[in-house]
Image (cartoon, rainbow, N blue to C red; front, side, top):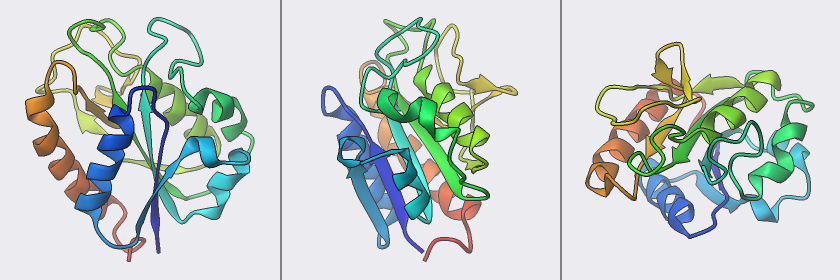
Length: 175
């Protein structure tokens, strides 16, 4: 089974993180730019996925990524992804935007959850410095927040731990 990492980026940071995560997850991992999709139904064609999203439209109620994800987020809930494992990774800046830290993760999480996906990869909020985030659901981040602006020294450790967690969360589904 193949894991596909989807990303959209404005500055290149989200693509870089997607590539770094793919290297940690190893063989049977593809990386695709969301800009290359024809429609939200393209998500149905993959076995399992990680969706990497930045938060640009801080404080907005919707379309928070400011990237190609905004083109698909409303359509995702209308497709059937019953039981397909999906994890979300978000980039944000906890110092400059601590009131909206990685908010776009929540938007994608809710869309894939509504499509019936099996959401994996939540992490504790411990060790993060932020004021508020819509991505905190039931006391945990709904995916992995990465802060390349204020905490880049923590990225490798966070990615490594999360890659191991995903391999467990998706055990039996990844080859």
